[in-house]
Length: 410
Image 1: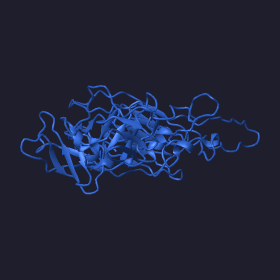
Image 2 (image 1 turned 180 degrees about the horizontal axis):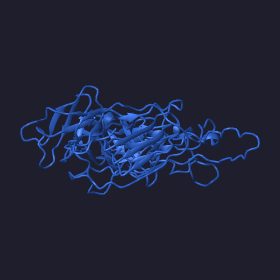
Image 3 (image 1 turned 90 degrees about the vertical axis):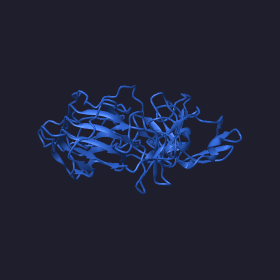
């Protein structure tokens, strides 16, 4: 699959155009537009530039409890709309490399109850009993202890140019335009598909010798963090998930009821992903405006190459290799009598991320110079690929080089 010389590069897109913008009132800086019924998203892009979800600081003093927080009487958030859609952000909350996020379940004038299982998974991680002071997962600490570094996704926090809010109960977007933006003519896109291209994920399938050249992959969605699961990060966007995940997930024989293999945490998906594949090639492709990871070459990928591709404006990792769910390679075939035998020994790899991508909006209209990255993925073969995104014949907004310090936007 390739873009042809002399034409705009084709785009495989999971985006839905958002139209019908109008001011919410005379003199108001806020504009609104209808959202498709059922649409849930964490991103919005205006003329190819990512908007920021409405954000601000915690507006009340709070004391952490087993279920959330107690607050000073008269918490203003108790009167905010859609309180269960509010999200607390903890930059560095479970280690300097992490950015856990937990949704709110409910708010009263004196208490904030956090959503489960995110809250327990982020505050009760199992500790070793050898006086080492370390968790069994050996990554990060037991609990978030600080107050949230930011509060996101509340209409009442919508006060800066470039911020948006999606009211899912109203099926309506709200947005404050940046200088120079005209929403009556702007191309506004909301991601609606999680997957753009993927193999079946079955070892019995084997997609082979597939190439993508000069293709742009854009506007993929990721909404798991909007649920009670939240984003209880371990590292490299791997997460603790599930009821009592904090006490069992990936802890194997170290705790009663632990799941194996050790370190088998939940991986954030890629918008483009292949497993058990052979000789998949990406050449001068663009992964841009994506809500989770960009490209995931997972279990069983062999002889894959990624050459001169650009990864930018991505909420998760740019490029993921391998996984943590298979403890060792498949056993080698039996050796015929009289021949030499060679045995490979392997251990479960840690989460491996190559080419982690910036997630800040791009501001230039020109393509960045591609950075050549060739990589060969480990053991095994792969399945039938299917493009499920909306395919466009032209690229209206070229991916661009961020001009600010990268920030995580999961």
